Image (tube, rainbow, N blue to C red; front, top):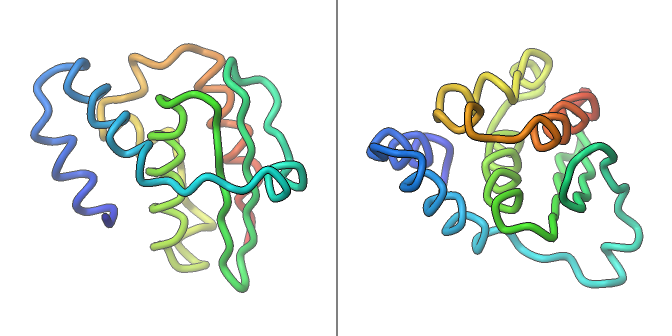
Length: 125
C-alpha cells in the first residue's frame, strides 16, 4: 500500500472509529522484527507504548515496531511515508501534519504524539 492509497482510505472514513479500525488493519502490514533484530533497535522514549524505530537515509532503511496495535498502524504510515519521499522531501517532512491531514492526531494521547515527535527528530538526511 502506498501513501496515496492510505490517504484515500482515510478520506473515506467518516468517524474516529472507522479510522481506528483502519489503523488496526494497517498494523497487520508492518513486518515484525525478529527478537534478535528488536534487541538491536533503538527504543523511543516518551510514548505510552513500547516503540522501536530506526531510520537511515542512504541507503534508505526504515525499521519500526510497537507492542501496541494502534501504534503499529501509525508506524506503518510513517514507514510508508519515509520510504516514498526523496531525500529533499525528507528534509521538510512533518509527521504531525500527515496525521493531522488523516484526521488522526486529535484522537491521539499526548504521549503517543510525543512518540511521533521523538521519531520526527530521528529523520535526518
